[in-house]
Length: 430
Image 1 (spheres, rainbow, N blue to C red):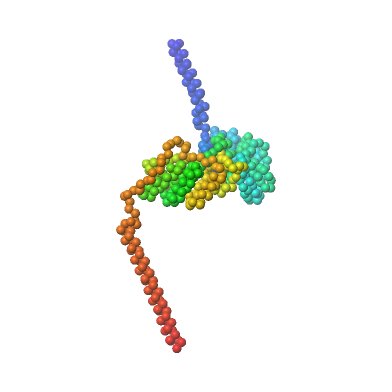
Image 2: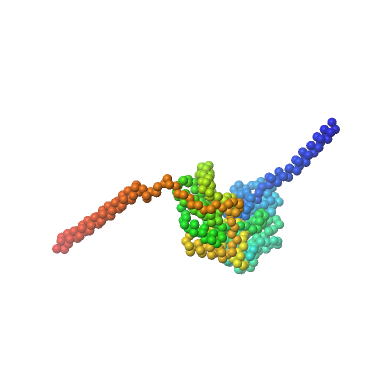
């Protein structure tokens, strides 16, 4: 009996210890990811930046925000003053964006009027730009990141990394300051300080210029520059010859170090309430299956890198020949075109000494060699048929008849004018 009692007590102790050990694990599993809380107008821009920062986060727009959303969160990125105040009250250290949050932080904010400003960070500097109104940090005791060089007041910090809150008063999309904000976000969320840079040929359609695409792929391949070919999804008519020519071009791009990525469906993102999502999902699955059957490897892109504009890239310069990289993942657009355009873009990429990554090498696989896709023989093109020739003849005859009618009408009109003039002259002018 004593042995059984001891065994029972021992098992009860093990069970209690296991329960106590599991409690913190369960609590940790329920801890929310970083929160992005902003207005609906800012949501797309800031969500794209966090994706490029490789961050796991939950988006909450202002209309849906309640204090309860902050429970257990220690990483909060917000543009809303009330959210910043609530986060600090809950014990979190928020990253506050925009001049509206200044009162909730430890900084002194000043506004410059008609300011010329240089933005610089980590050896990279953007050429001066003019701003009518620019909020900047005029006083702060603590660690800072980046520099804004204002013509009238001198050097000021871009971001303040305070003990109770981090703060970035000003940034602009499609600007170097947006990349600097990405540096702050990566550091705040600890997602790494070195991102990947890719070259992308974007929005490739079945009706794109295939010759220009192949010309661009050849030039990039000859210069050892891997690239992303981001194609637009095709929902139907996958058996048509036009799709076969499209797939043949994708195979060629793939053989030239191109990573085939399917662009997000524009319909999904813009009209979610007016589209049959299940039907579109089935059509997309059919498109993916068709690509696989034609040996086209689709590379997933769950978090899209930030697309840089050519103007932004040309406005940023480094201290030496080597351009370096950003903390965020970025894509540099490459526009397919004629030989002169392609050569000029290749020279720009080579001149900047960019560290271009190969997106296709995320997963190791054997790159298939290019083999032309045979065109379906079951389709006859309209211009090669007897019906097409008959229809062409019909319109040719119709055009001839129309021209004849117009010519006769003009002739009759001219005869009437001449006859009328002679009649008028005989009657009134003797």
